[in-house]
Length: 147
Image (cartoon, rainbow, N blue to C red):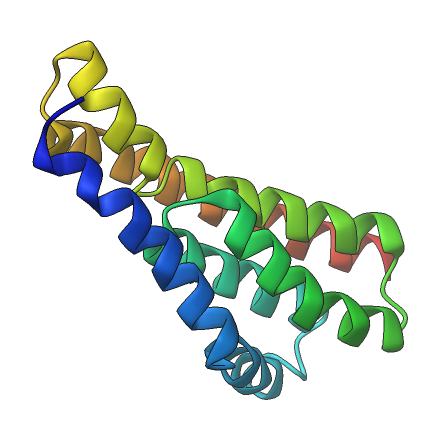
């Protein structure tokens, strides 16, 4: 535990706090809400898009779930989205922070397992992006079936 790789952990936490305090998430959500407004389930797609971006920026699940939940949940509930669907979108999107690189979990796992962190990042990129795309396709299908 004496490597320089672990220096990235407090920097990722700082990035999450910076994104929340600078209201970058709120502005991004407003822009995506306007972009996806006419689409059925557009707020869910905007929420998942922000979750994927935040997962890549912060590297942890907690910061992105809190930021997205505070911004997206009131807006989606205001427009009559189902509470279960809203909670599922926020939680599943926040969970992507663990697998989409750069992830704090991968940074900790690399030195402990004796594996290169860059190889872990490379190996986790495709599954993380595929999970995000799968969530988006699922939400679109649910919105078209339910409404």
